[in-house]
Structure formats: structure tokens, C-alpha cells
Length: 205
Image (cartoon, rainbow, N blue to C red; front, top):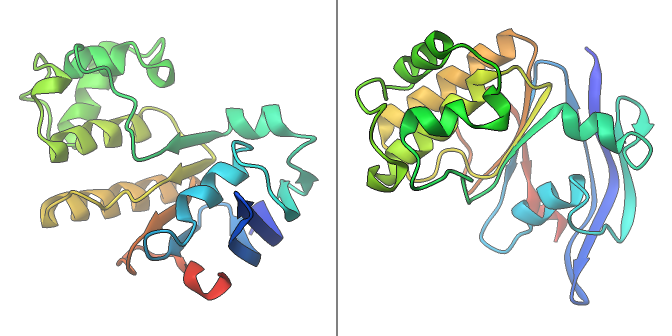
């Protein structure tokens, strides 16, 4: 397996409060790592630390065997990050959100329509995002995952606010993208059925 992301003895501190310490793991090409933890355990802080949005206190983050500080541009171009805020434009229609997304720039409309069908939104293409339910908004965000094959998907709680059908859809899309060689590092409150290495962040507090 090809190693993409390597975390070594990572320690994160915020406002003099220790969030987690001595965390180590690797994300290999086509594989997934699931960070499990309670509220306040540092799941979001971990993703933001990897992205350089939160300063680490100690430890090393490597991208393809290079310190991420030295390969930041390449790393960010190779990642898709989705936080709790889905970064959708509420006044745009479903179709417009994908058409004007930087992830789908230059893609043909038939590709976008096919992707919307895959996530069950083909009957909502003209509806504005502000008129969608929380679950439908999550499906629209899922469509963006499929618009391009990023090497690494950093996703904060992808299974939250979804019914059983939505959860199955997320699992299917993760599996499909894995088959294309894509990897996932995602967070959750409890262990999911995703094929992933499970890391319980509460053990590192």
C-alpha cells in the first residue's frame, strides 16, 4: 500500500487546554481511517490541525513521506475537506451549487445530472438549497464528493443527520471512491460500518 498521510505523536492544545496528545496513525491509498470520539474530544480540531488551520503543539504530519509544511500546496490540491458547515450557497439551486462549485468547474452538465441521480436528487435540480431538508443538503454535499477523485477526503461526521437510507448511501459512495483509489479520514461519534481503521480519540486525551 502507498502511504499518503502519516501522523506521528501529534499533540494539540487550545487556549492552554490539552485536546489530545501522542496521536499516531497512517492513511494509505484506497483505505480509510475513522476517528471516533465524544463531543469535545478534538475530532474537528484534528482535521483542522492537519489542514494547518490549527497549530499543533508537538508531533509530525507527513504527506507522501514529506513534512506537510514543505508540501502544503500539493497536499491541499489533493484533498477535499468537508466540515460541519457544508459550504453550499442557499440561494443557488441544486444544479447551480454543483455547476459553480470549484470542484466541478468545467464538467459537462450531463455528468452533473448523472451524479445528482446517484445521490437521489435528480428530481430537485431546480430547487434552491435553502428549501432542502438537512438530509437533502447532505446528499448534495455527497454529490460533490463524486464530482472529482481527490486522493484524500477529510470529512467531519459524514453520517450525522442522515436516515438509514442516507447512511447506506454514504457507505456506498465511500466504497465506490475507495475502488478508484481514493482514501478517507473521517470523524464520527460512534463506530460505523465503514471499512476503516478505527481510532478512539478519547484514549488520547
